[in-house]
Image 1 (cartoon, rainbow, N blue to C red):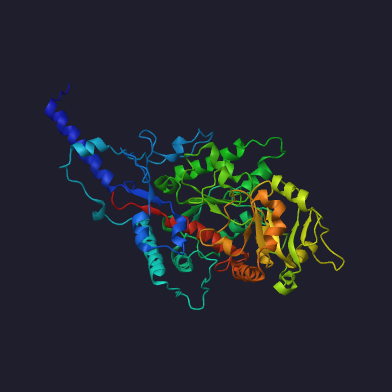
Image 2: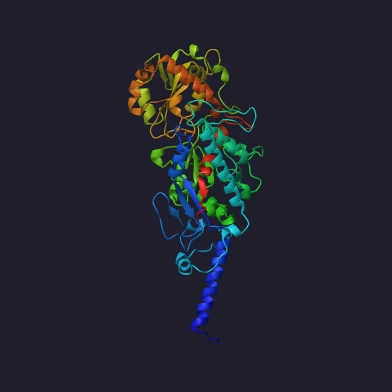
Amino acid sequence: MATFNSSTISFLLLTALVSTLFFLCLSPLNQTIRISTPLSSLYSPNYSIEEAKSNHTFERFQSFPSPTTTVGDEEISAPKDKEKISERLPPSPSPSPSPLPLPVHNSSAVSSLPSIPVITRHEKKRTDFERIEEGLAQARAAIYRAIRSQNSSSYKEGSYIPRGSMYRNQYAFHQSYTEMEKRFKVWVYKEGELPVVHGAPVNDIYSIEGQFLDEIESGKSPFIARHPDEAHAFFLPISVAYIIHYVYKPRITFARDQLQRLVTDYVRVVADKYTYWNRTQGADHFSVSCHDWAPDVSRANPELFRYFVRVLCNANISEGFRPQRDVSIPEIFLPVGKLGPPREYTKPPSKRSILAFFAGGAHGHIRKVLLTHWKEKDDEVQVHEYLTQRNKKNTNLYFELMGQSKFCLCPSGHEVASPRVVTAIQLGCVPVTISANYSLPFSDVLDWSKFSVDIPPEKIPEIKTILKGISSRRYLTMQRRVMQIQRHFMLNRPAQPYDMLHMILHSVWLRRLNVKKDSSI
């Protein structure tokens, strides 16, 4: 039987350690990513490049454990014995093939042998991920230059250039959108089958969910990646609305566990099959959903979805919506075969004789209070519970009255979002939001105070006084701005520059810009 003395054992241990360090340094997993948190500062009118460089803080996450954690610069690491995201999920009834185990970083061993030579990352060929990061760094630099120089020149002749105070920073927005058009690529995961994956409603109240999915999978979008290695972001084509429609049938329970399990299992599949989720812990992955239950998907496993980008209509800050990571999108109501209300109902300000208008059911507390105080009680503040859909001229009375109103009341229903916000803008009516804790769509770039009115629910009895207090000059300015930002709330198929679908993509692009590899590691 072979025997080994202590020097031989030491030599073997040292050789094993050198080999481990060698492969660690070659591994693409040996990298740190950081997530920038102050998104809105980039679009502030008073944004300063020098201030940005000193104050732009990041959350950081690694694919191997780190010995320290600091506030404001948080190290996020996988457990030593469970490196894969999928292993932190509950067991699946049908397990997928597992990838090779990730190497575990031993920080104490590295510090005890500082003289051992290793191959640095700079000596090996750049990975696709590093090339993507270089492109993102160039995009950030271009945005900073645009803010500093206040230059709105476009690389596309004749393209739209955003101007006006309704933009938080028109130069940052324009350059960011330009960079998105030049660079941004999205990979749509192919896994899954209809109806709950790769399909979603394209009509009625959840239609934005299906319209976005259909656009991105149509093959006509310039933002589609040809291969996942060239993608900046990864789209999970899951429809919460269709899960509720097809899986919860008959509707005998409102428990969210089936919904949560289906989405979590889908993440398990793509995390086991590919490296993309694991390398960023989902920070460059997103889904789009307008169903009221969509925010509940992540609550069963908050650590798994900690950096995942949720694109939601139900953007309620009091219920866990995170404006720095999540995206608020418009809720719209689309009749079959339509992409919006008829434009002929839009009247000029001089022909808008109604001060304020609302029509709708008593869904939720805020609407009940509104109807109690104002239903059929005032000719100037016209509040109705329901309207006959067509008048004597056989036109849509709801759209007609909206087009004749100066202000359109948009109270929250059971959830914070209301499709009336978009309809009001599309018909040239100044929206009046009546909600609590609602993060309005596209607030990263749009200053809603410049073209809308926000009335807290507790001031519903004062609606007429508040709106009457707005001068004619201010109203005309707000209405003109509504007309200017209409393009951002128009649905086109195929999508057009700066329209609603591209604005959703731009919101995701902003979140991706704020995921950054830490070159100091």
